[in-house]
Image (cartoon, rainbow, N blue to C red):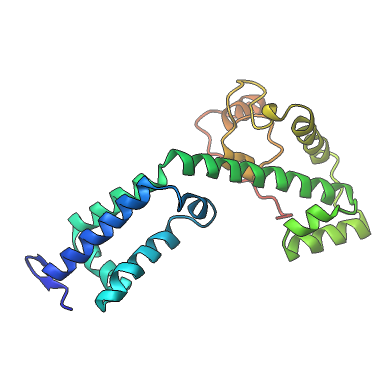
Length: 215
């Protein structure tokens, strides 16, 4: 199939394009795709739509992508619908829940690393091989103890155990700590702005890079 003339894509590609848009609109009105998107993202869903529409017509999804890449209007059509799907309130809620669970899990794993305690089975089943090796090394040597970080980790775990709604809430301004920050610093007591104030750092100073070497 030809991609079209200088005046634009061929009628066949326009027909395929309309089918793609209709499928994306139908998906956005449904809910069956949301759980997949919450864990794997929108890309696999979009790829499946393209396969279902393009392959029966004897063209490849890659060829369609090439066509819309060179046509700004078609590209905007697709981007608008994908953005609408990504902004779906149910998807956003699932993503927030998943991000929070990930932060909480990292907190538990870090606690076992810092205290060199043998972890329970639920920890082993939820971590990858690299984290297992770190936990084993910590349990055998005890060299991962950290007298500065450990109290903060324990305080965060205490919040989760006694007052879960307090975890992830800034102790100073009472606002929600962004989940992106909790994923990087799961023991965070404050949002980035209030942490700067605690440390006397100017508001216009660049955000320090946080690296958790255990993960």
